[in-house]
Length: 111
Length: 121
Image 1 (tube, rainbow over the protein chains, first blue to last red):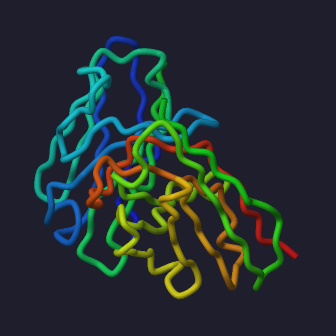
Image 2 (spheres, rainbow over the protein chains, first blue to last red):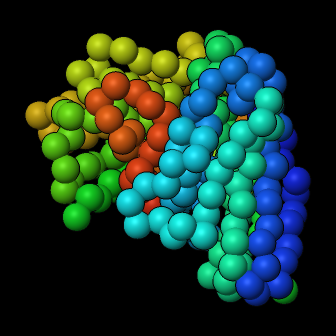
């Protein structure tokens, strides 16, 4: 099972909106609504930001939103803030012999 | 406060064995499925293994299947990962992660800080 494909980096200015894509196949992202997104600051453990494609856990800012179309999921961060600078990973359940896969990761830079 | 504290990471030779532990507190441990996730230095996240709340179901990534064994002791609020036949590519920071339910959802709402395993001669 290969990792889901994400852009290596995305950047934006404070206040702007950015979108991170996560491309898989019909065996993972496209086949199930079990997509999640994690934020990881340097030297820290990941934090769950989105689950079930578009649901936010309690305490996560509503500036973070998720969606999916076909085999591609997306994370949008609106009103970009300096604290949003981090690595972001998508993940999905898969029907392969490895039942769960992460994306390759995207470094978000706030200009 | 939920806490997950991993231990057991060391430098080990290729072909060697190691047992990681994760001590859980701040929640009812036997209500939740638990996972191990690893991250090689400077690399992305890789899911490794999961165990259901009662230990009755376990699953593994193909990359570790047949070499790693996940287990739990609910009486001790502890999660374990027995790692055998270690390879250089197993070098990583190993995180213990709590699922959001007892039935695995693969959504991790709490993570430990990780324990570093280095496989090198």
